[in-house]
Image (cartoon, rainbow, N blue to C red):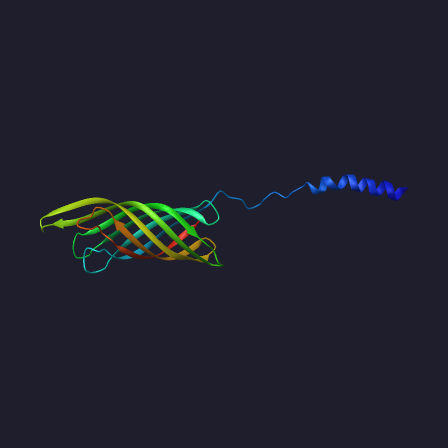
Length: 175
């Protein structure tokens, strides 16, 4: 009889333990990374490559999908020709140990500054679309180094648009 009472007691008390679940301990709304880098570009306007700086921020709000914002300033050292770009768009990344390859598609605005007929300075802005990809490498827990390539298409630049290609090497802090 004691066995039957013990069996019945354990049968009716077991479902209470089965309904208990552990609460997640490491949940956050997203992952933010802010960085800067050295850029070298073929401007598609002057024959030599030009250099400058890039500032970027990535916010991954899903496991592999996020948003990237980027500002870049490149200038020809011998003239007053420069390009500034402001871009934002989606980014897809994967993580393999310390390596995180990614691809991105950005839309934005590009400002082109040049001397017109050797006398006056012109400063014109155009919409642009950029496609790129790269690799983030985790050096420390919160520090990544980055290498990337980006191809841009500036719309409306006479006569057939402008198509710069940019290589950037940089570092970022991951919050």
